[in-house]
Amino acid sequence: MPSLNSTTSAYCSPSEMLTFFDRRIIGMLVSDTGSPVTDLFQLQTNTNLQEALMLASAEVEAACARGGRYNKDDLIAIYNSNTAAKRFLAWLTASIALYRLWQRRGDPSLVVGDFTSALQYLEMLETGKRIFPFTETEQAGRRLEFVDVTFGGDTRDLVVKFSRLLGQTNL
View 1 (spheres, rainbow, N blue to C red):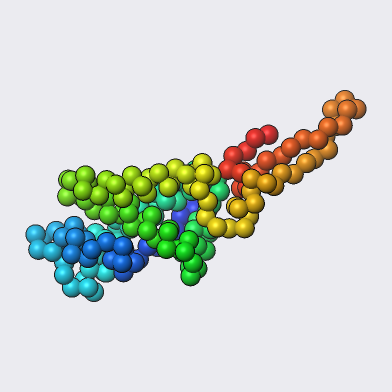
View 2 (view 1 turned 90 degrees about the horizontal axis):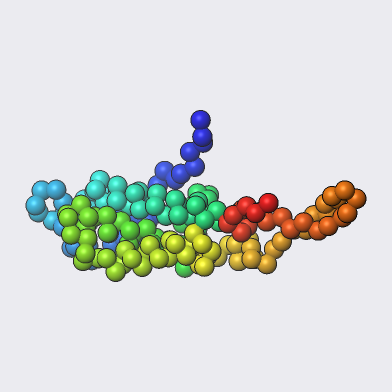
């Protein structure tokens, strides 16, 4: 049975999401009663908002894992830091969550620009066109290991590319 490698908390808290987007809109989107959630505490503890943030976090993890550059521990390290990368990770997660909340209501077209931007960044993270600021990742494109290999008495350098450093295994 494969081992699950996923976070148990979102990469954006409800209070962080409210710094990115108007809380009145979020309050309308998470309500199932027809009346917007206006109380800040109720909004921050709203199950629909928390679920949207977890779903968005899973989407971020899936893209980062697919690219092979970042794993759950890398993303948690970013989220637990006090850096611009943390804010970007939180924004990325919040943008996807906002789209998912609009999708619940049947009209995500109002936030399609934010969602499209978030998806483009996810794709760039996956392909390595954009990276999170880990020293190992920043140097990944410059780091190759050479190994001497002998084939029938002929010694040649074989370039070994590591998936953790370059995003794919080419052996």
